[in-house]
Image (cartoon, rainbow over all chains, first blue to last red; front, side):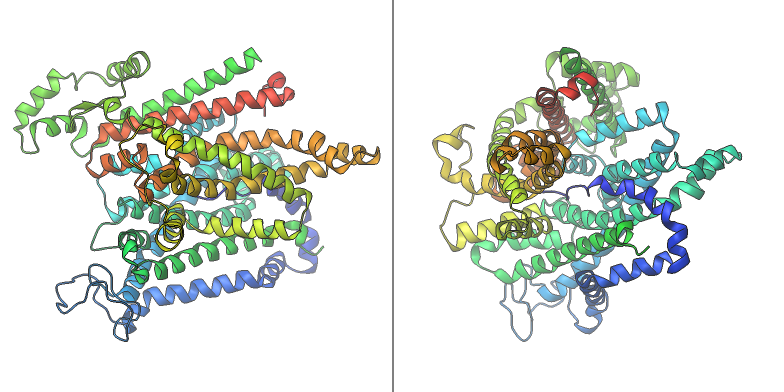
Length: 312
Length: 322
């Protein structure tokens, strides 16, 4: 579907365990080392990380090696439209005459960087909202959660389309709206953490010693829900890339001359009945691999933060 | 039970009011502010004075809360979702033809999903780590990675352009129940939406049943000599239905969002295509009207899920918490 199902909530309870075991595990092997080891043990995750690194190099360094013109089709007037793959154009050209391989790099720059930035906004807003709501509790919590219900009752894609229609469209704005609409699920998860951590002894001790609410949120709740935040952030980036491409496919995404993978696939899908496979399937393959790789990294991180897997 | 439904209804109305506050406030942030409709009617180069007069005549400068109250009054009592100044039609007039089409698309794929995904999830849970389980899990993971529009493109490629040659898009301009009289054109969109939902739902059904299977009462039932089939039907499925109903309720917005993409891929004229067209032509009132309608549909879906949940799970209707 649009976006993935939220990760199961069962790792909330693990936060407590996690904290309870900190001292013992520290005595043997530092926790981060164990976590790194668990992460490195997951071959698929390593492969995913390698793939993403290669892909970032491909998108950002590739254009400097494989020179193509991606902005002005008139500049190279002897272009062939819809040309099949050849020695000159390794993956053929699209319906505007742009080299498809160079186009994948060019679109990837936008897909990846915009996805990252939007995912970052998502996690920042979601974390702050969830923590404030969960930690303050009471009437604030009720109000904030009702507001969240209202946001959640507008299907995300409709909300995005509405915001795009109302505000002027620009690349920066796309990042902002995908970031601003993507945090609802994150806020719920982080709120669960905050609710849990504020009841723990050290938070209470801090309160008893006169620590202010913001001090406790910053010094105790935030560091201790870091595991969830990092995991959720990974999935958020995948979701942001997905939404950006979906908007691109609907023709509401990045505007020409810029492009992203979703917009490219939309252009390719128009040529699909003609059988010009090179205009759509290479992009689609790269796209799906990116999403799958990010998802695997997220899963591996969740495992790495899973206390039950730590050595005691 | 009655109290429970009443309380849930009250909550839904509060949420709906917040949604309406959002859809009402958004036009204030348009580039031309609340006078955007004036420019739509009088032209972009209209004399500022004329625009101002138009605004006064149409009550655009009345206080925010007065206008919001009128908005609520119009939506609730007159079922008026707004007026599209660009097309000079009421929003309901524009979309009324397409609402049933989208609802049929979403509903038929939801029904198909429930028919297929629930037994699949139960089977996977009862035969864990079997070949079927692995294949279904693997397929579900692949489907997670594929965005809705790409799945649609692949379906088109396989079942329309390469093999089988099913029609690539359903007949347009026909009555919504054409889905039943002339189903061939509707196979691909409904099937694509169903596949997406199955990937999502069968996983949840699997884990819900698995969670029940490790409960004490299941062990007790086994110890008392309950057969596997009876245990699955009497204990596991009945207890796993609760979470599934919640998931179905939460899934409804995702389904409508998926419908937008599917409609766009298969050129299925429904609400999705309408909202995309309206957004492209910057017809804000239509976009807001459709969004509000979809939010109402979502809230109704959630409400229905909660009522059904109350019916299947007595603990919920008594305590009122989930």
